[in-house]
Image 1 (cartoon, helix red, strand yellow):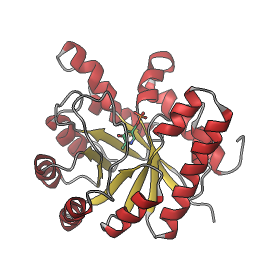
Image 2: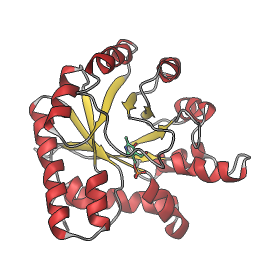
Image 3: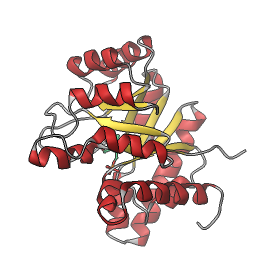
Image 4: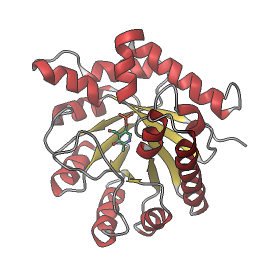
Length: 251
Ligand code: PXP
């Protein structure tokens, strides 16, 4: 039986726009409320060390005021672990973080940092939070995520996005194949498989059609498209495209 696919709406860049002027408008929590009424299955927010978009209080309000599962993205630091265990979101996705990057540039090196990541995953699990590790579509990283005790991985689709952006069919095929193979390896190991980064109306369907992937986390494109069609309509259209791809509809 085909597994359903969920859409996690990442509202970081609503906060980016708010912070461009200071003040409180637009409110990322209001965006999350809207997402909840337009078909989102979860809300994702990344609390960065430099607080460039989401702030501590946003994360607390998202947990307290929104009925959807909250996916707290964060770096593996003691500061973030303390906040996550206080706020108690549904899930925490561990990502690598580099102060000078514009966005999360690559997956976590779980294989190289196993002795550091495994206890981190254990602390989250002990606190009742579902851990997820954001990894590149590589066997070594997926096997390391499994052995670190994570129940979930999120596959970084950034290289696939870059290929679609370059409109290079051979590269698109190659990168998509890597995502497909990674999803199959992870599922075979009993991991729950999510994916995200750089997904748009134009490139989401081949990823949504991969049967092992049960959740996509999408942010930047939806917030950008909100300028033209409104956030609610953008979320509804993304969900429609995902579901059509899943059921073999128009894809
Ligand atoms: N998943 C993870 C782990 C991310 O770090 C990001 C980017 O913040 C996303 C998904 C969403 O990527 P985008 O904003 O490009 O849709």
